Image 1 (cartoon, rainbow, N blue to C red):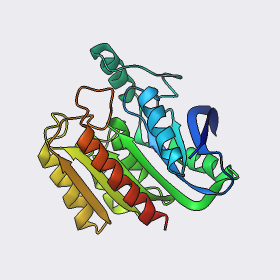
Image 2: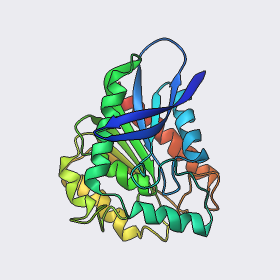
Image 3: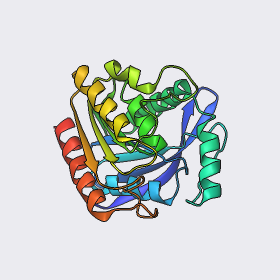
Length: 243
């Protein structure tokens, strides 16, 4: 599907959140997917994923979740980039992230080609954690969490771990994890799956014998087979959620 892309600005009180928007060019209305970045910013990989989603027939938008501390943040994957990305991650709070997500939802609802009531989100690495947080917002019908680290152990800005918010989730959650991921022990994957089951949240947890970052074709842990399977499951999630 032919698409067009642009950089837009989402108002949130006195903040203007820069976001990368990709959308089909054909006339019609489309469900929307919010894409949450890794710690490396809205970089080439995140923009590519956003475009790929739009090519499947969705409005796709990647808001900059470091807008407050690092506008325009876009780095690669070396050790210095990782350290800098983690620094800015540590400056975020759950309240800010949820506020920015709500502002993004409001922005999407103003677009003339948005299909009302049809919003999903997905995120990678820290963005996977943010996606789990965003799943607690009533507007989110479906959430895909790709190797979201720390869900079972902390929440941005401090407080009870994000996993304790699981009862607030109203849509479907798919989780994609590597069983060889040094950042997310298998025990934490088990805890997430158990919390979703306990609170009767529709969910699927996919485990692959791979490491962290397996979906990103610019990272050493990229695993084409696992990435392809996850993409297929993701399509099924959206087809079901938006049926």
